[in-house]
Amino acid sequence: MERLDKSGRVFLVGNTLRYLRFLRDFSVVPYTNNWIDTGIAGFTADKRYVVQTLPKVVERCVLMATDVGDLVLDPTCGSGTTAYVAEQWGRRWIMIDTSRVALALARSRVMGARYPYYILVDSPQGQRTEAELSRSVPSEKPTYGDVRQGFVYERVPHITLKSIANNAEVDVIYERMQPHVESALKDLNQALRGRRANGFVEWEVPREAEQGWDDAACTAHARFWEARIARQREIDACIAARAEYEFLYDKPYQDNKKVRVAGPFTVESLSPHRLAALDENDELVIAETAANYDLGADVSRRDFAHVILENLRTAGVQQARKAGRITFSSLDPWPGELVCAEGRYLEGNADKERRAGIFIGPEFGTVSRPDLVRATREAADAGFDALIACAFNYEAHATEFNKLGRVPVLKARMNADLHMAEDLKKTDTANLFMIFGEPDIDVEPVTSEDGEDDWIQVKINGVDVFDPSAGEVRSDGPDGIACWFVDTDYNEESFFVRQAYFLGAGDPYKSLKTTLKAEIDPDAWATLHSDTSRPFPKPSTGRIAVKVINHLGDEVMKVFGV
Image 1 (tube, rainbow, N blue to C red):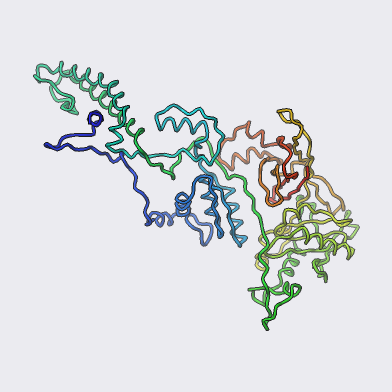
Image 2 (cartoon, rainbow, N blue to C red):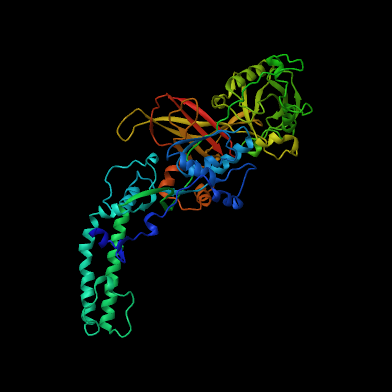
């Protein structure tokens, strides 16, 4: 009871003892299942997709159901709102969708977003912030920057009579600061001796000085309230720090001097499930014939391969340089199993004609390495000089396949706009079919800082590109590469970015600053602007993978055994 009195938390109303409670003692209200505020927020939301969910709705679900570092799955991700929210709040995520439009929107949205930099608990800055909030000595435990330990959150105290009564620090503060209050009160009563016979006790001192008080009384009065307010502020802070409290998981502390971008992620593509096709007599269609059925589509719709060939005839195949375009003098159907057309183009300063077999991948799916091998064998048997494969996506191992015998394989990635090919204006200026060559890479043995010899590093020299005008492979330097990544322990299933580097002509440092709208640590940038990777131990899988991306966004991956 004495501590409650010292804290200014008890007072009399008549003969009844009352407890003084402030709104800040527990200044939060828990959410209910009536989320009215999410509806109001929707009127000002900037939507990118017709069925886009409001980030505030997804954010509340994620914060209620997961902790930092948990995995979030959205099997119908649309424009990637779940990925955007999960990335912001430090959750891992897997997004799935069947629409290429949705995946393109989600990818650009996550890659182009800027997020606040939340202070990690497992960091020196987090230890200092926690110590300030709890009024304790900072922890000296080693930190590792593990996001799974969570963020440093704002918190609100849940102050009760019990927490105040059991707080021994109130006595310490009162004993330390009460002499200043009593000294000022003594001086005030001394100055008012002629006006008030018995003097004031502490609780009787008015908040404002009365008229007629001399300067000495006014000065003592001001000093009294300054000391009393300082004492109460210290006690209130002590009560708030020692009381039970609730974490505000939607309000982490931020470091406003830093900006955060998305962590590394990959976009994988899987072929759709194969469906059994039935004809008009409900008879099962054999596999060879099933390819001719366009399930769920209008029978009047033109064949996908025919549409692609029409655009290929007009647009040609573009390589990294404009001079590297393959322009077909003719493009005619070919009665093959996988090779569907024969294209003719000029090589060697337009004096030698070459024949290329055209292989077109599925409209909704991924080209695998066995598909390329079979198509290349078919092209070789038919006497073609090269195979040009056109597909929206290639399986990881397919990107390594570049030649079979004498027949080179050119893998052209088709622009997603070709899904709307019937609505596109056919023009030779559109980069609808892009070829990006094989990276020219050296894997070099190095000695680690600890003196271990079983370490390696990767050096990228450029990209080897087939030049159709000369009929030979030429090498572009590192200036043709926008960025490149290394998976130092490739598992043959998915590419995980473990090291990232940025190259390219011009000033990529300036471009990155402009994109982030923030300054970048020059020392940190120096470690990222390099054509040589940091040393790393040989992988347990015996494989590493390197992915290279050019300035047009085309990418190629190569796997190395080490």
